[in-house]
Image 1 (spheres, one colour):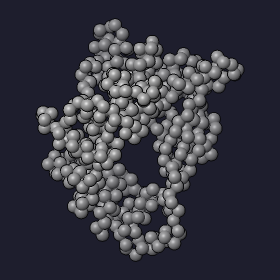
Image 2: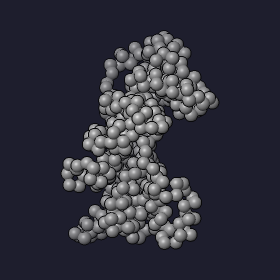
Image 3: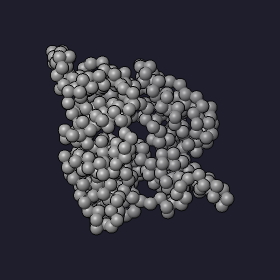
Image 4: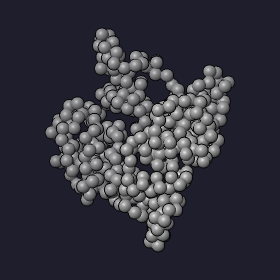
Length: 431
């Protein structure tokens, strides 16, 4: 599934060249705001039915960029998609838009394009019927398959409670895939009450049978004590087994842990080797983090060419992180651009992927162009998304030349200077 957001401008009464330029400018800054917004959740009912459409909304914002009014201008044809679009955009802040100085009585448009993805391959009704009969008769493979169908709304009705029930029946018969699937539902509280002790119990059952994701999930439970017991030795044991079994996500996490815990660069090579194994499998996080290790000289000798090549392989698959990292290298003269405006295009792609660092880097670009207001809006978005340097920059702009004001603002956030926002390999994503 995917959700694209198209940006429309405020309605103009007269279509002139000036109006066209103004509309284009509005579109340009609106998309920067919307890149910072969390994407609305795709309604499960629409996704299960592979339903898509376009929800065109009209919004009004106040001087601070907060939405004061929102309405559906053109319906997608489904109430659930329109409702999700409305709920999602109400959480957005339009700081960049307010830098244009538009009065609050303007209506601005944004269009959400809902694309559910390819429909599952059609199955012979006899196969569906056979699977249901086998599951009812006690076949664990069929029970797990039927649970997955209910979870994803494939071939049968989307129903998380039914998914959990079928996973349980298969899990109780020892099916490792179903045991991990049931553990995931307990961890999320989907179809069953959230119970991380139960989640770890089922992860352990599957992990003992060699299920890679269950081993990685059990490792996470021990690492963070989410099941009531924090045990770093057990966490490392199960993560290593998962990585050795070939799970790329576990290889990345194990590699990052080893890099972060090694005292000297000479002892970090094994961590970088795990990242290399994940990168060899073309796993996006493996490519990105191995690129970081070459860029920063952590676990590998510094090599900008290698870093840039790895980032390019991860473009479009790393939530914007590879785009931002590559653009930063090019801007610093440490890698070559493939086209004239590649840096700006990469930063914009990074923002579209909601990488917080992209907002900071693009903010610096527009600040150098003399667009201080727009830069401040981008730093503010970066701050809200958790970027340290964006927060520092935004606080300094707000405080101006008043040392007392800066000190008061700095007391609300740590670290307190941009220099303390240390570049490092980021922690791995949660499974």
